[in-house]
Image (cartoon, rainbow, N blue to C red; front, top):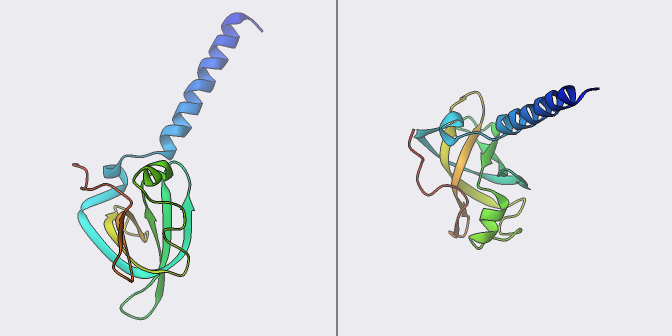
Amino acid sequence: MGRKSVGVLAACGIVLAAASSARVHHSFAAAFDASHPVAIDGVVTQIRLENPHAWFFIDATDATGAVERWGFEGGTPTSLVRSGLKPGFIKVGDRVTMKGWRARDLSQNAAAVREIVLADGRAFAVGPTLAPAR
């Protein structure tokens, strides 16, 4: 294989790697609606402190009594730690209110979380302070 072929293959590999990385990460406005704030009460079922964003999942009861699973995207785990939060600040089984902005895809029970409020009233900022401009 010639030098030119190796260079083309390397360039293709870089482009594919960059494309998959861009697909995984998104802008706020692409995924969430800043004009649609939500506050959902429920019980924490799962916490994923992983890159590129932390995720918090709760089971919430709707008006008919049915349980709905909601997913809330937070900041990066390192930004949470830098802001003073440590793993364990919230636990599976905790009753919480998640405040943030609804996903644009209304078929999903998902939102960008700004604040998590525990049953005892303690509040933790885990997302953007203001909804980013569109």
